[in-house]
Every structure is written in structure tokens, then in C-alpha cells.
Length: 164
Length: 450
Image (tube, rainbow over all chains, first blue to last red; front, side):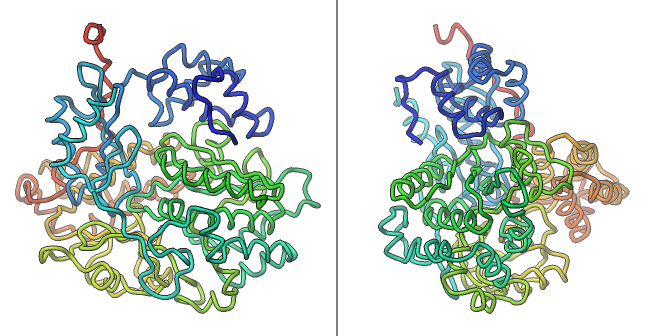
């Protein structure tokens, strides 16, 4: 499949291309469509985003909402421009996950699930990310950082603040 | 920030064959170690003969259920018996806490996974494969997609369509029927079985569902031949090698390929370098967080399904997570229960409500606010979950909790006598935050952005 052409095709057209991967008459394109809509709408699914997805898939916005509300990566409320997700499941926890999360809370001045006042960064605690041998795993804008320690935290935050 | 250790620790490298530290992501590199040779060989064979080879090898599912891969393929009706397309879905929704092997397969030997898919497609005469990859795996998705594009351009797919479908964050979608629901564009809630996926899977059509590692093991099984494969490991039931996921309080955590049958002690002490800083082993999260925890007296148990099964353990997805003496087992059980409470899809009452009960009771124990009778109440709650739901997510909360309550009852009791956790801040798991307690995002105030 060709890589998504950002900004070149409309959301509607792009979803039609996604639909061709699945048999006609099925709703399989909804997860990719919701992910794409979220990407296009600042990281979360607004009412307008649901309407666009529904329109492109011939579904109702309510149905699309019922799907989005099931999945952790689909957000129903505004999020920051960047996200920091700290794994706090047991494997990372056994090493230093809580200390890493605490360090991010101190550095950002917000708790897990919250966004900094300037709307720049959302901090989140997440379940096992599947990187258990290099704790703590932190997903920074959905890219994994391995073996993160509390000492790495300030640099990660600074790096994000410098991005755009 | 260190790299994951991924290597063949012992015995023949099969899943990791040809990988010596440099990822085999390019087609030419994979070809250079015999890549796609088995596909060519298989395509020259009768499909049934390929299934027969898988049956003879006794390759079993590496996702956790250990179901014979060849037999599963044999349940799929042949195209002449059914007027529907036949599907393969690869379960790449790796989410079991402590499991990180499928991710490494996709990063290090993605073409072997694709070759396995194509051989399986030939064996069951399917032209449609969906690889359902967990939504959080971005880099893994990109590496696998690039390998797939390269294979397609090289003409290797030969009319078989492989689509990589990305999830969106839901542990339950690793359960096979929940995965199918999710793939169909629904909420990922498990289905009632029967009908089984082999008869009515995705889009109500026959569907073969296999874990990434199981599929990736198919080319090496054919390469060395089923008879020789069946001699490796702990035959007759636990044949071959697998990728063990070693983590926790251990000197050299990593993904280690080794034959079934090595002991837990050997993996932890010899391959993993033992525990750091003179700490002592207190428990092992064996198979994944969904199973009973192992106590030190069982460390000489061979890592094969029979030996583990005789002692009430499970091999699961090959997880061995070491917990040293500093950790409080009440905190461990609580954190595990919180995970399952968060991930319960809510369809079956015993799981939806029972996991919440377990969290409340464990929190009371941790705070020293429980009573001795609450231990039996917890075991009773576990009993009322196990085997009473559509899928095993509830069981997966109940089994580890019940094993902690039973095996570490003295430690649980000490919380009551002490009026709280006797470990204090010494336990690494103290106060470990769980996403289930996470508040919804607070919106950035309008005036801040103005």
C-alpha cells in the first residue's frame, strides 16, 4: 500500500483508499480512520472529527464514538501537542517506573492524565508497552525510549519543548 | 539508553537463525541466510503435506495457549468445501505484561514472519492475511510494513494479500475472538465459542489465528524438517526452541532463544547473570502476569508445558520476570489486579465486577485495613471468576492473585499485624501508580493558548 500522503489528499479520499484493504460492506476501516482523524485533529477526536469519520465510512457519529471510547489510544478530550507515556506495569515497576513517573510530574508540574497549562505536553501512565527488559519504557510522541531513569527526564522534556 | 539484548542463548537458533546482532530487515540480507527458500519448497508441495509437517513437528502456539499449530491449521475447511474466502490473522497484539518477543521478531527478522504467513497461506489455501499489530508499536509497524512492501515488489506474495492492521490500545484484543471483533471494526469484546474461528472467524469465514512467534517458527521447522524439530527441547509435547522473555530484578534481562526444558534457575542465573547486587529471588512471574507466581523452591522446574503444568504453572508467552526480596507481594498482586480491572472489557459480570473486588480487597490489605477473613474472601472471589466468563481475562486476574494469597499468606498477614505495609518505601513497587486510577485529561485552558 502507498504511504499516506499527508496534506495532499483529503481525509475522505484517504479513508476510501483504506477501505479497499478490507472486504466491501465491512466496518474494518474504522480503527485506521479514527487514528487518522485523531492525527489530523490535534491528537484527539472532537465532534467534528467523528462527523468526518462517520461521513467517510457511511456510519453514524454515535457508532464511531462507541468504538473510540473502547480503545485507550483514541482520545475523547483535548491533549497536549506532545505526549509522554510512562509504563508503570510490574516489570518497569520492579526497577524504577514510579521514580521516573514522579520525576516527570515534578518536571512538568502535572499529574498522570493531565496536560501542562500551556497545552504543550500531556503526561500519561500506561500499561505494559512490551519493552520489559529495558525498564523504564517511556513512549515520547509514540516512540519508545528504553532504560529511562529519573536523571533522563529533564532532557526529554527540554527536547519536546524545543520541538516546534 | 540501552538496547534490548536479543540472542540465541542455547541450542540451535531457529526463530533467530542468521541474526547475529544486525537486524535482517532487508530482503537481500534475509535471502543471504536462506530466507524464502522454505516458501519456495512449500509451494512446490501439496498444501496438506505442509500441514502434515507442522503436525509432525508438534509446534505449539507461542501466544500462551500452547495449542498445536498444525492441528489448528487442519481444522480449516479446504476451499472446495466452503464457498467463503479463507483468512489468516496473525496475532501481533503483544500485550501480556512481561512479553516483548514478538516485537523483537518484527524488528529483527520481519521477513521470517512474512515467509511464515505465506507458507501458512499456502497450507490452508488462503489468499487473505491480516496482521493485527498492537497500536503502540510504531517502529515495529514501520519495519514490518517496509519488509512487506519489499516482499511484494519482489513478487513473493504471488497473489496473497497481506494487510497490517493497527490496533488502538486494548489488551483484550490479544484474545483471539476479541481480535476478530476489533478487526471487523467493533469494540474488542470476546465472542462466545463455539463456533470456533476455524469455522466462523473474521467476517464469519474460516480463519486461522496464530501468534507472531508461532508463524515465524514455521520456516525453520520446514528447514530442519519436522522429525528433527520434534527432537529439540522437551518432546513429545514441548518441542523446539522458544524466545524466553527475561526481565525484572536480573543482571542481564533480554530475549533469549533456547530449547524448551532448560530450568528457570539456569535461565535466571546462568543466561541472565543472576540477581544484581546480591539480592535474593523471592518470586517469579511465570508465563506472564496472568498466571500463578512461582516460588523459589520450584526454580529447578524445566521450562516446558508438562513440567510446569505438574506444579500448577503455565509457560504462557515464555515470560520469566524475577522479583527479589525487596518487593511486597501484596503490592505486586494489587498492581496485577489493577491491570486486569483496567483491561476488563466489561462484557461478563464476574470479570468486570470481580476484578474491582480484588483491587479493593488488596488495597485494604496493603493499607492494613483488612481482616484475616478477607484472605478467604479474595480466594472466594477468584473462584467465582475462574471458568465463568467468555474468555480468560478474568481468570488471568484471579490466578496470580489467588497464588499470592496462598503462597505468601504470611506476608499478607504481616500487613494486618503491622497495620499497613511492613516494607515501607523499600519495596520497588511501593505506591506504583496504575492507569486505572488516571483521571481523564484536563483540557488546556483556552486563555493559556490565547
